[in-house]
Length: 138
Image (cartoon, rainbow, N blue to C red; front, side):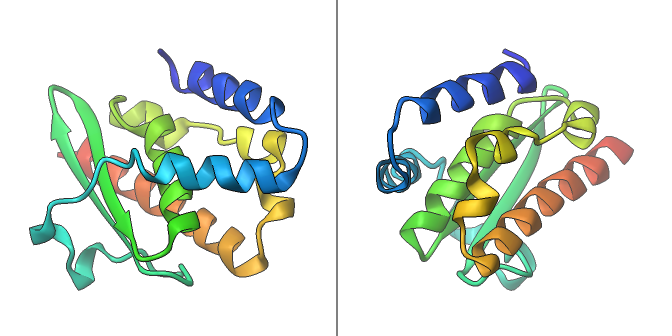
C-alpha cells in the first residue's frame, strides 16, 4: 500500500465519526497499537524536540525501507505518533522524504489540536523525514 493510499484510508476512517470527541477516542485507541520503541532507544538523542509531551522516535533501515518505533508519555500523543508511523513506516526513504502529509488537514487534525500539540505533530513529521533523509544518504 502506498503512503497516499494509507492516508486515504485514514481520511475515510475519520469520516466515520460524527464529532471530535469520537476522533480523539480513536486516536487514543491507535496509540495502543503503537510499535513500541526498544527501551535502549529511549534516550535524549531520540526525543523529538518541539513536543509538549515526551516522544521518543527510532528509525531503522531494513531491506531498503524505513521502520519506525516510538513511545510517548501522553496517551493522545501516542495516538498521533502511531498515526504517523502507520503512514510513513515500511516505505523507502525517498518516498517518506517526498510524502505530502495533506491528510492531516483533510481530517481536521491541525484545527482541532491545541497549538502546542499541532507544533508537536509538525515536529514528529519533520523528525521522521529527517531520519529517512539520513538513511537515504547512507
